[in-house]
Amino acid sequence: MTSQLVLQDVTVARGGAPVVRGVSLTAPAGEVTALLGPNGAGKTTLLESISGVIPVTSGTVSLNGTNLTGLDRVARARAGVAHVEQGRTVFPDLTVAENILVVRRGPGVIDQALELFPELHKRLDVAASLLSGGEQQMLVLARALASRPTALLIDEMSLGLAPVIVQRLLPVVRDLAKSGVAVLLVEQFATLALKIADTAHVLASGALTYSGSAEELRSTPGKLHAAYLGETAAQAG
Ligand SMILES: Nc1ncnc2c1ncn2[C@@H]1O[C@H](COP(=O)(O)OP(=O)(O)OP(=O)(O)O)[C@@H](O)[C@H]1O
Image (cartoon, rainbow, N blue to C red; front, side):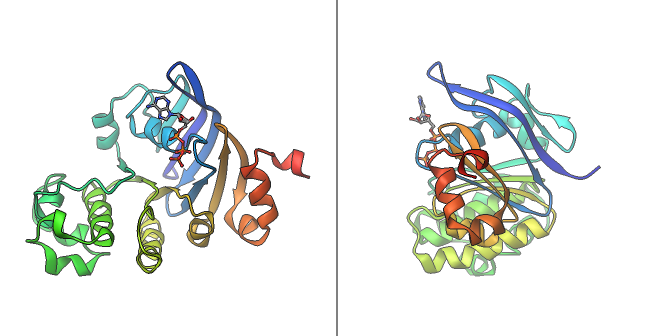
């Protein structure tokens, strides 16, 4: 079976009101799937409903054919879901090595997690709080990789980082997907995400207004703007 993350008709409520409404999408292994949309559209909420931070109201979330919908966060992580949340949540007092070993211990774990981040090798004994913002984001990604996920959810990786750092991290995310992981990338800077994404979805007021190739949105900014404004392709066309 093809390895993939599949959402079917997912609705999620916060404070009693639905903030994600009837979202269906597939994030295949080996690809970057971008999830774009304006502030407050429901992107973070959707990622949280996939990793089990909050429950769905209705609909299903499945990974490689296994229904995750009724599982708690730990069980979903064991099933292969890793969630890189907003805000670079390192353990500040632990060293780089310890941050990674929190997730999984064993021979080769650190080398495997840092394969795509060689610059962190010389910082293994440094407390995470002393790293730069870019290094912390690398550590958070490396830590997520230590769990050997099949689906990786990344929320606003570029927040507060210098453009030069973001340019360094994006190809890594691309390589990561190429290694066989299904990457679902939430990114405020749409043009950055579209550079490395295969497929893109735009969420506006909790509902999808675009699902299609990233290339199409890259080459026709008008479509991207219309989707952000809540117009579906049928309305825009
Ligand atoms: N803890 C909460 N309780 C109630 N409502 C919430 C909560 N968190 C978010 N919301 C609301 O849910 C909606 C979706 O928010 P969410 O953070 O998922 O959007 P987003 O697309 O990720 O936005 P951003 O880009 O600003 O992070 C917003 O209207 C927001 O105000």
